[in-house]
Amino acid sequence: RQNAEYGGPMKRKLYAHRTGFTDVILQKNNTPPKSKRKIKKDPNPDPNPNSLLHKKKTPSKTKKRKIKKDLTFNPNTNPNLFSFENLAKALAKLYGTPKQGVESICGGRSTVLASLVSTVLSQNTNNRNSSRAWASLMTKYNGDFEKVRVAPFDELVSVLRCGGLASRKSKIIQDFLNALYQKRGDLSLEYLVELDTDTVKEELSKYVGIGPKTISCVLMFNMKRPDFPVDTHVHRLCGRLGIVPVSYTHLRAHETG
Image (tube, rainbow, N blue to C red; front, top):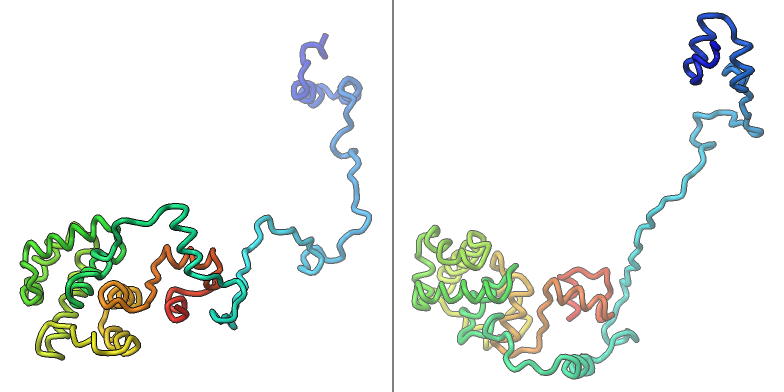
C-alpha cells in the first residue's frame, strides 16, 4: 500500500529516506544505488591528462581553400591561355554582337579630358547612374570644365549626387582639374595623344584618384589604343577562364594585360 502510494521513482526515494526501507525500495526499482554503480575505466589511461601531447586531435570540419600562386606566369608561353579572338567569337555566337557599345559611358567622349571625367563618374556604380551624373554635370555647367573647377564644392556634390559617391568623385575631379591647370596653364589633355601608351599611363597615374582602370578606359575608348581595363567583374572572369592566375590582384592583372 505504501509502495503504491509512492509509485514514482523520486517519490519512492523520498519514502525510503523518511522510513529507512531502502532494501524494499531498491527491490522494487531494480536499480543499484549511485555509490555501487560500476564505472568503466579507460584501459589506457592518459599519464598526464593536461598535457597537449596526449590530447586527441579532432579533425576540422571545414577545409581551407588553398590557392596555388603561379609566380612564373607568362602570357606568351602559358598553355592554358587561349586566344581572345576565339573567345570573342564564342561570346558573339552565344549572345550575339552588341549593337551599341559602352564607349559613350566608359571614356569614349569627344575629348580626352571629358573621357577621363566621365570614367571617374563611372567608378563603383552602374551605367545608368554614371550616365545620369554625366548628364547632370553637362546640364549644370554646359560642358565647361573651368566652371567645374571653380564651382563650390557643395554645389558640385549636389550635382553629382545622383551618380553615387558624390563627395569622393567631386574631390577627385576638382583636385585633378586644379592640378592640371597649375601644371599646364589650361584644361586640356589632348597633348597625351602624341605620347606613347606607357608615357600616358605614367603621366595620368601621378594624379590622385586616377587608377589603372580609368587610364585604360581612356586609352581604349578615346585614344583607340590596344589596352584592357580590368574591373571587379573582368578580374573575376579572367581568373575563372584561366587568362590570369586566380591569385593575381587587379594591379598585377593590369600589368599582365
